[in-house]
Length: 218
Ligand SMILES: [Zn+2]
Image (cartoon, rainbow, N blue to C red; front, top):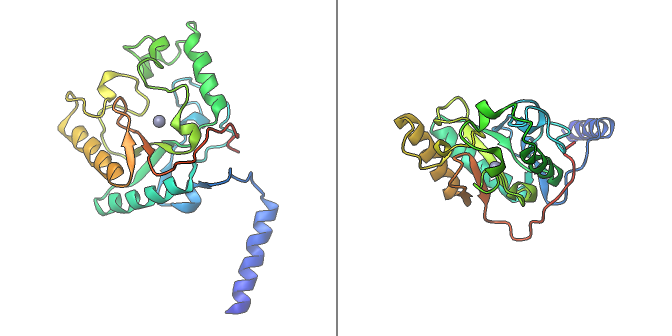
């Protein structure tokens, strides 16, 4: 048994050495390694987002979070599972250069490629004033997460910058209202607070020493 463990550990070390990846910032974890029960659909690493292209800083599609946040999410995942739901995250830690790219995008009137899909009723220059994106984002602290239940109706898709994405918006179906409330209640119970404009956005209240970072996700 002891030699088996030793053999496994040397395989693990070999693997780590051969496939060395970037070390996450101090205090951070890769969500996939801490809570593999949560799915990842990292939208800003690919084309399926309001820019329509990969966002600077997202060198790979991984969810990085402060350890405390991942641990809180593991409790949320467990309770969600008991209710028959599985969690999916769309954005986690966000390098500051990504926000700088969002600011540049919002100022570029000529670029309206994704208007119909993501902000049909909004002048994109108002996206910061309305609070859909923050210039100093909690995401850059590694304490915010954009999250949903896989395959469930929430009334509006992730990152639809619209009044109907407000968590307590009354004009969505009963099913969507119920799902928003179940997600909200679970997240609040485990120490998160919600951004009222976005049913999917939550930030964790239990980290006091978080600072914004601009380390590329790679
Ligand atoms: Zn968010």
